[in-house]
Image 1: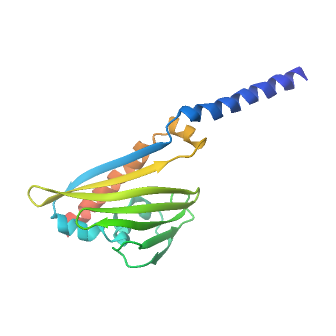
Image 2: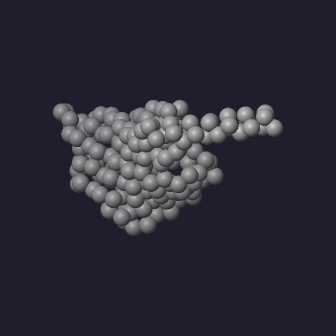
Image 3: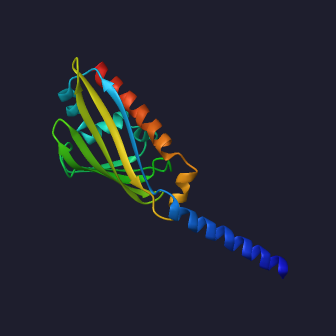
Length: 180
């Protein structure tokens, strides 16, 4: 019985630690990556404002060519929704909605993940003119991880993982637009 009691106490201490640490751990993170594309700002915006075009450069869209997709509304306008469903857990299921458009400047999206876990996060594509008919494109993502799951942010560099995918996607976007 003493052994079981010690095991129970030890287990209780571990659970207490796992519940206390997240109280002092960040629960929000942001990821931003950028590239410069040798195309005029208007040309770049015309392409990125269409949510369906993300299928051509987003790493996640490339992970499962057989994913089911559906759309609601008019692409390139506030309220347009692009939904996906995949058997691949790295892609999962969810939808993305255009929430705000600043013409020629920025597109804000709401990402609603349904599988493998539920989450709602914000993302955006922002552009700026650069000298020589070039355009800087910034792809950003803001997220919150609820307590007590925010403890995972101590063990995984989410910014680095998502950042790598953004860099790959931006490199694809650059290639697509510069080869047009």
